[in-house]
Image (cartoon, rainbow, N blue to C red):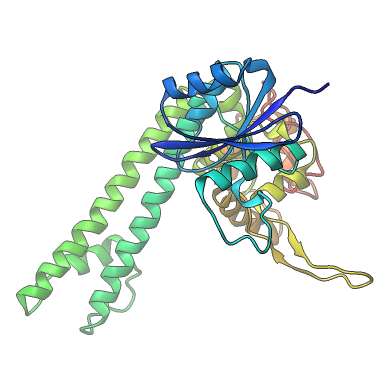
Length: 345
């Protein structure tokens, strides 16, 4: 007789709603406990033994702290994709207790999709890569505000000056506005643009330092990814940070499905209708993959920059970008990549 208990956890910053699906089929709510290690330990002790418990909670802003706590206590814990949790069409009531019971019930029936949980070091690398991406977005917004502010009173750069070159920055910084309020606004926007640029430079230096001290297997994959066109250091680091081990999925289509870069479909009977990409999954990975794939619309060519990146790599790795498909990276050690020429990136 199966004696496994399936525990659903609705996790928040201060509290955790708990429900359990019993072996006899009943789903019971166990109330709400504080989101603290001692409270989690008492929960496992009361409902244990730990070997008979299987717990799950939806991925969210609380990260994977609870996952590591339960794993250390001997509980088989899974973090599931929140957008793939089944919800009844007519169910319009959402409470923490009901959400926990829904997770426990769906977990027992096998209807939940687990996500990959990075180790703490890998999660730290991903946080840094995402911080740099956020800084780049903030810089773009700051530049946009400054450009539109200059455009409103009719200030346009002279002909031949491209935006955000050194000459353009000198033009922006030259000459005060007529009204003090406008001059104060200009100085604030210029300062914000400069601050955003300094922030990006600081984060990129930190990324370079982290990559230089990363394990040899990670550095090998980052170097090998740069053999592909349109993938330099930042893109390679982002891919490694978001994907982890490239060999986790046996088929490239599964990896692309996780990033939402596969075609949507609504087919019924003899009718087959496919649309644009689903855009579900890891948006950070999807952005990098789509931007890099744009380079493969053009005839293959190896310029000076790409040749310099490929120089220290082995022959199998250098040869992979020239195949008909872009190819998974091959020839690297440590199990971080696998040679599958059918891969799309």
